[in-house]
Length: 220
Image 1 (spheres, rainbow, N blue to C red):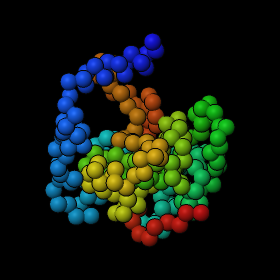
Image 2 (image 1 turned 180 degrees about the vertical axis):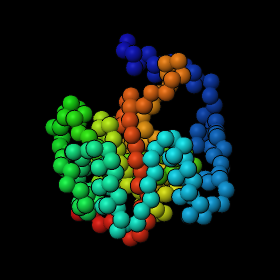
Image 3 (image 1 turned 90 degrees about the vertical axis):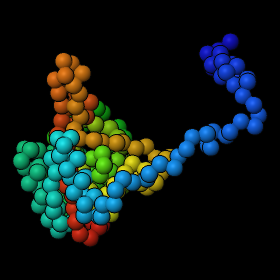
Image 4 (image 1 turned 45 degrees about the vertical axis):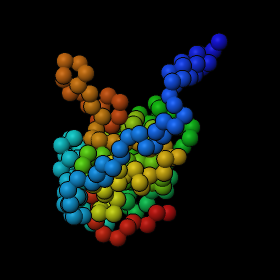
């Protein structure tokens, strides 16, 4: 008997005394919980996002769409970055004010090659204000999960207010469950050893988030 057969056999045994007309699973749990908490308007929701991002030790910047290229250039210069990883579909205008070497993500790029890259810049699918969480779903300008886990510095651009929601239920409604998603709440960190916080253990040591207002940037 395989492990699979053993497990399924135990499940059947556990369900043997359940009557055929038992309450269906979908109805067994009351799911009429609140989708959102409070009645924040769009501006207040963005402020809550910025507050919670900072609470997670992400560095928050604000600018207009026209100021974004210059803002990104200043961030890369302050970091001393000489290379930046560019996912497919990223608006080239975001990097138009910097001469940092652009590295295109490739399927055969190794983790060692990614580790030698100074910074990565991406967009996002949605940002959750209540939890200070950025969600990437591998859409245009976001790339594969590993490009935001290996380089030590991640710049994430969020369009406000249209990419910002208040709660997790609202975020889930915007996401395609068949797409891979990466949920980011601040830079990578752990306090497992003697409660000492160590950053950059299993992801970027530094997360910078740019909240961009104005017309939606074009995607090539």
